[in-house]
Image 1 (cartoon, one colour):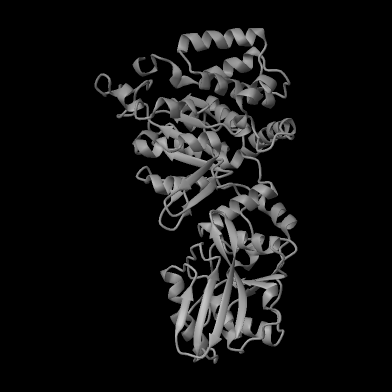
Image 2 (spheres, rainbow, N blue to C red):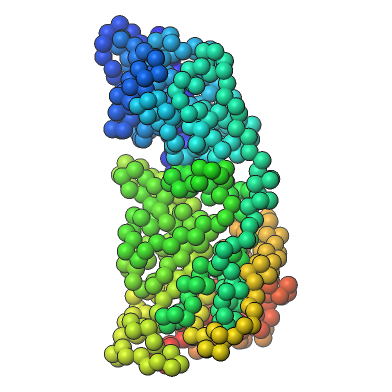
Length: 513
């Protein structure tokens, strides 16, 4: 008997429909075709054990299985459950009248338990788009998949439940998620708050500007000046997720197996902090079995690179294209996948190998030329793509020991949200642009044109600092954000001046002063 069961293959962050055709006929062989990898081929042993433990019989016939389309590689153990259901249906142990209404996925344990899988959300979205009535998948993934409206999601914990579902019409409870309530409850207080940071008002202002416009920022300062401390508090001032952002971010983390199984969606923006020993593939994604890299896991959030010059130069160079295009395409001989990479880069570094160049109290002991050599570990083109470059000096003892309260993250966040709302209205007719940092050169002429006084000030800075055309664009973008924070429709000279001051490392004599 020939039957069809439906599953899914995840490619990039999207899923593709897989049709599993199972035919039982006279014979004793077991054949599995359709470009399955080793883990799919090994499903035979898991299925045999799972059926036996649960009082079900593996057919003593020839079983031929085709996984279509045959040109897509089938990877992972999540095909165990649809394969098992297909085999039982082809041997007439499971009724087939309702099989076509459901998409089925899940890994089987030897005792028949259904184990969690990766990519539940993109699979659920694909099932809805292809008109399936319901989705059967592991109970642990049900909450994540249930955010897709118009699709009945059934979480199962054992293969016996699936058999009873089709034979006896004993449907498990449909998993329901109230997204509005979860969103309301998700806006929680962050454990880390900017009120913990003493002093550094100019740096906190630069971070506020970066968050308000989605700008990349690098902090340069000696050890103990608070670079990492402030970077870890940036998520506390970012605007909350929109539903579309939450769905897209959850899809990426679901494919990577990084989602919280107790939550339906990610409600806090990601904060990725890779170690400086990271490889190119781990940073951008790919591998034998393609997975999102750190830059994609940071999508709609923050990628924090601490001790930036310690990263391998080739790793830093691969960031250049994603910083511009906000996506990364991984092309290999056997596959090509595209991952989103719209992250905000926050970097920190010491000013020199010893860490005390330009320190007000301690003398730098680095030999002549080593400061410039240290800075040159970061290429000019990459530094050009960092909108805000701010120098940090240590906080005086009086401010550290003082009891004066600092501004809370919630207060800063309100200003950031107001600035982002201005930008949302400004770019509502432009697809794919949501913040000032995403503006193109053509858009700068429309939305960020300074007056004559501001243009003269910018020209002087360009000539004295030998700034590139890209740096010119970055200054205008940052100035536009500063004007938005001030609720000013026009960019004033004071906004241009502040934006120029956020290009500390562009000064030709910075390494020598």
